[in-house]
Length: 369
Ligand SMILES: NC(=O)c1ccc[n+]([C@@H]2O[C@H](COP(=O)([O-])OP(=O)(O)OC[C@H]3O[C@@H](n4cnc5c(N)ncnc54)[C@H](O)[C@@H]3O)[C@@H](O)[C@H]2O)c1
Image (cartoon, protein in one colour):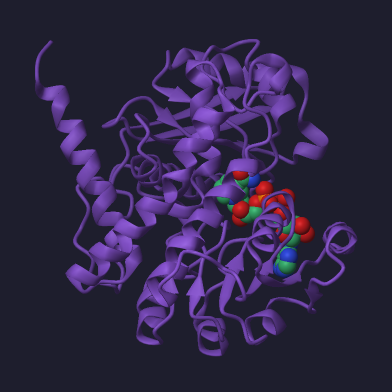
């Protein structure tokens, strides 16, 4: 059973990061509705910056422990992501235990919505693995605290649009740091996973004049890209991609792409992609820095999606959300500058900057109104 009250502090790994004051969770709620089969856990890591915001993952976890561990990690990650995205939101996340393909029903989603509502705005939900905008429309029939709904229901729709745009902004900042100009023109960029985010990233890259190499386990995903860009090179899997004489490697499939092996064979000077939790274990960020590879921290550059859904709360405006996602360029720049100044990898600098904002802004609640 994971230790809920003293869950592992961010930064206690072998990287010698300082122990975060934001290490443990504020509130963890277990929700059950036997008739519909709902078993969910909502974790609120921090409300220092405002109501917690983060998606609902619907996944057939092997055990309750596995679900709890996941939701604790994911909600902590959201606190850092939302802080650096400049949002007035703390970090939260929810998991629903079960196979969405077989157990997802209207009754289950609405039962879940009632539990979200019961938190009275301490937690706003959104889509994640296994949940879609159409599901959020159903959850929203029971709760006011739902984002990621369809456009038809006043929502922001598919968040991969601004996620890809934000990753591209982060990549431009990394290109500037390494090659002196914020463009990928003439660079060779490898995109692992050309799903919702990856294929949109390819569009930005081609428009900017980059050469693109891709890989995906889905033939259909590869064909969609090839149909629009016949000159995009395709390689057979991640191992081939990281060796493919790249300037930039963009992991946009699953987490854990950067492990001891791939770091050693990586040809790229920059790693910048959409996938969450790209570093397989703490310490990989140091291995990358030692090899002079610039790593743009995943949760910084992939925050366009949460920026998009957060905008929904005040009435969605795409241009406003896009402008805010554009700020990922400047934030990534600041992180590289702080990393250089403090002599730490960018992943550590990003954590420090996020904690600084949580502390500086969260403290204001102490001024009594
Ligand atoms: N969609 C968003 O707004 C968003 C926001 C933040 C982070 N992310 C993260 O970005 C990543 C991509 O998200 P998405 O929405 O595009 O998901 P997606 O499921 O649409 O796309 C993932 C793609 O990766 C491919 N893939 C899976 N395993 C692979 C492997 N071993 N090698 C190569 N390709 C593989 C899949 O076939 C699929 O085409 C995920 O890690 C997600 O958590 C997404």
